[in-house]
Amino acid sequence: MALSNKNRRTLVLQILKFTAVGVLNTCITLVVIRLLNWVLPPTHLWENIAYAIGYAVGVVFSYFTNRTWTFKSEDKKTAREFLLFILVNVVSWAVSQGALILLQRYAGITDTWVAAWCPPFLLGIVDAAFVRDILAMPSAFVVNFIGSKWLVFRKASGQ
Image (cartoon, rainbow, N blue to C red; front, side, top):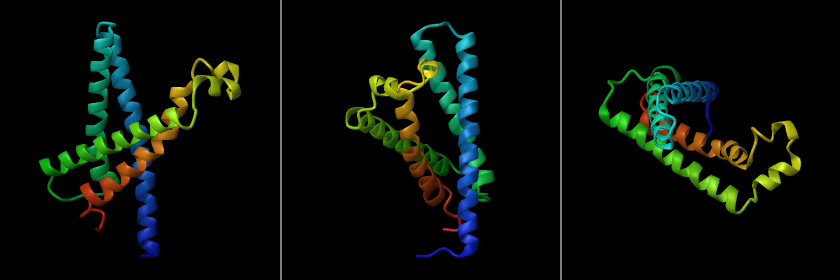
């Protein structure tokens, strides 16, 4: 099924907007986590709580921004729609976790492998977990975009 030029442009624009929302979402999530880590007791438990709160803030931001800007949904907001959005995010997280496991166990992306090619001044920042995270992100992005466009906001997407 070929896309018309108009539909192709709309799809590309939605992908670009979805990417921008994802970048901004990541920044907001990280800022919330850092602020909470600054004010909460410095324990592993509170770090995990800060991460969960930051992640939740990011998901809510992502939902409203993608709803109104990326996919321009004018439908009435419903709990079902929001729960579908949460479900899509959970599925995309699970896919990314699977990719991380595959990259660690079968692709051989280890700290030793990273140390073999990474410039020494970056070794404190870039490690195997970071490289795996970067490589796993596209799988989560694809699942999240497809789920958001064709499941959560399908009416707004012209589907």
